[in-house]
Length: 279
Length: 279
Picture (cartoon, rainbow over the protein chains, first blue to last red):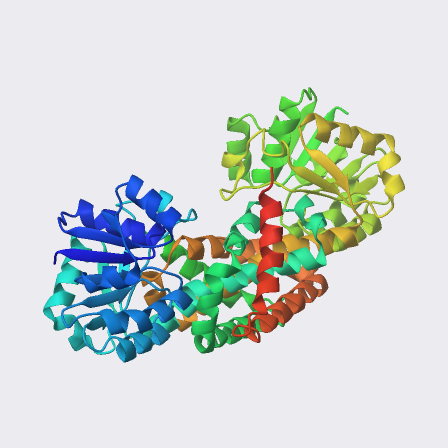
């Protein structure tokens, strides 16, 4: 593997490049992004060269798509026509079923393998990229058929993930999307809805009685819609399932406030919250 | 004011005693609590003497009830029969309408004034009490009639709150209970329900894909039911109102995942979350 093309040199794409380099990769790293981004990426030594998509994909052994989901779906159509028979195309999008389907349709000569690194931080952009972002974090891989992981290029990709300190885990695209619907998308919507109700019902008056618990519960609500639009659109059925189960649980609590039956929900919830914090 | 009786010498009652002392109070501080608690409170210098309720109330100018809500409601019946005409009885319970109603019924000779310090921390008990717990925090006062704040003993109480660095704010008991239904009780139930759904639907599998956002969103779910039972029972109508509005917002989100109409909820929620963090 001599050349990697990072398409979308932001926090994730830039961190992947830095992590690869830190793990010992000595080949070329090309970047495809807006000119200002490429300038920062070159200045920080994140990439070796900025190129247009066509040129970058034509000479790359790996194409790493780290754009927003909607852009990944568009880019896959162009990449499919450019990728050679030895190219591995992979991505870092937060939902997988639609992307993997598009990847299979478009990348007919090379191989597509969907991925989702469970890593990030509040600050975005290549200026905040860091070589250690994936260290110790899960890296979900979502082949449509587990045999796709047995190709030589897929094995090589997984080996580099491990050298970066990431922990690869294999799920089907559907398993992945249901899992993150509950662990990521539902918490986001629960936080957004809570903050929106407080703003609508009380506005600034709510700030008078706000404690650290409210700050925790509304932290995710700070996330901008631009990040979430593509996720909501590409994982809607599973998010609706999670929201419906959440609403059912809230209604159960509402109907048991005075009879002590809320206890079981508190105990079940506290048990989960404790496990989440167990070392 | 020569003698203060703290009934329930836990985190709040103990911190109130320490704060009073740190603010320059030189009178006696009596404690009413379980024997082991009194032992710790005496050892830490939080109180001067432990006494049974009857004796403590008979010689106190102030009676500060810092027990769980259910216990405050019970204690008020006994305190009412013991309080003299100069006694100020106040409390630190997290809901106010039922407590203020009970206080007015029971404390017929002295004066009852409901209160709710917006302060706390995860660790409980007098061992964690600290003089600075109320510093910079709101202290909600809930007279049934604002004129109750004009008595000499009420003015003296407010003056001591200010000397402690607390910021007294006056609300009616009903305003208070609606406010905390949204700012405290709804976030608690939203977090508990989220953690309970994750445990029921995914269990340990959810832990595989959990990030810092899920930890934030489920932090309140760690709170034990014992703290919440009295709150849910004494503020049920307003909590149901808040839950119904929350469910309506979640259903609005569920029905707009794919058409981009979720944007307005994200923007409203982010605006609230940002204001909450403004300096």
